[in-house]
Image (cartoon, rainbow, N blue to C red; front, side, top):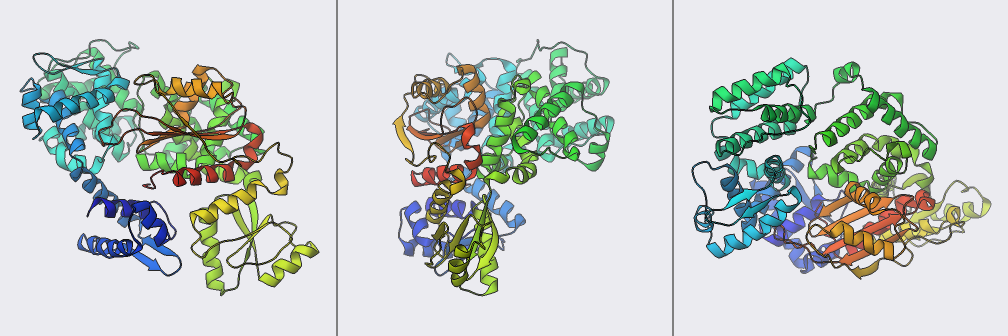
Length: 612
């Protein structure tokens, strides 16, 4: 599979509707004929790998990847494997970092590290500079002297390794590197987790179990290299079960675990993600702090949207908030799978923005200062509530058809899946669309949509049979001009994206420089501290892009900006070159769905990779 075919498969994986062949050809910078040829090769590739999914072609519609959940996971694993096998920089990063951090047999020089990484001195020197940039946010660096050494807070250095082992190509990394990392200790480490689960009457998720044993194994290597954590606050007693676990680790690995190391292992277990079961929900009782914050959060949502989340959601929300507070207290962020973050922050962008606004703009919640991943968890929980509560942002659509019933209902499914802010309430013929719009029988319909030209006295749109991105943009533009918004001072995003450039003054200064620019444009009204918190909660990295979208009373207007910038090279070989910003004022809250849909369409038009 070449890089073009890899990109095509990623693009088709990222949508559940047909993509026109011409659109794919434009994105892949090839001809329509090449797209059709690649489709046949990809189908052959999938078949050879025992995957029942296939790419289908429908005249007038384009291409669609048809696959079930099991096939989706299998294809994702293949994409990761292909990514790793075609990315030498990523391979060297995994190999080099594990040697530098964990190998107790050798103190590496640039030359010896280049040999074990099957590279050369010049390439490894270039790699070390890039690895330094990745270490910077963790407060670490690779020092060059007689030997290469790692400098920085030992706890943060360990978290750096765990974080990046799961950040890129996780499944393929495990297959390639974990046998050497764990050697013959995997079963022993899993039994330790089982012991804690049994004693604490809890169950951890598979990802949490794996991250815990990875942290413990890396810690053992670091202790053997005489890099031990001697101080760790807050000072507390270690529970009996965790002292037992640490005693077993000492016997098994022949190492000494001081009190600080034991405390940290206890906290790693404490903050790791637990499986949520019916029994968990029945037994869980939130502490006073989590309960009070949850009450404030639910009251803020009720004030904004007229309904309160169900009482059945209270314990779940309190549990997530309690865990989130603990994560910040112990300074242990627990990352989510990248697909979950992408889905919540991009696919469901308006709902995520509503949740974070309720938490940021409510005084009693402003001091929470949660990690990015914890805001995402809370938003994921509240998704069903937000879909029901944000009624002002839903438009009633009449579908004008001239086809059979099966095609009509197929069209309904496609439109409602693609346009999150549209609900098909009526199906009409072209004649009915004309006559009923004049007699007032369509008073509950906001807009009519049809696949062939028709006449009507109410707002209407004609779309193509393939229902392309251009059709989505066209409909959203009409929605923003509907009479229900005629009292607005302006039509949001009517001028499109504001293009600019952003000079990042130094590594890690992106937030400061972006804040300064938005203040100069008189868009951001709050303090820099408030901006940093908002940015951390609402930003998302996508290949060479960072997307920052916020709904808050700290902005003066609804606006969309696209900055060109140059940042550091990541280990994936991609340079940070775009920062996209969407600010939405509180007065435009009821237009959030079409605003975000248009914003995403503008980003795609300007080159945002459709890889998710």
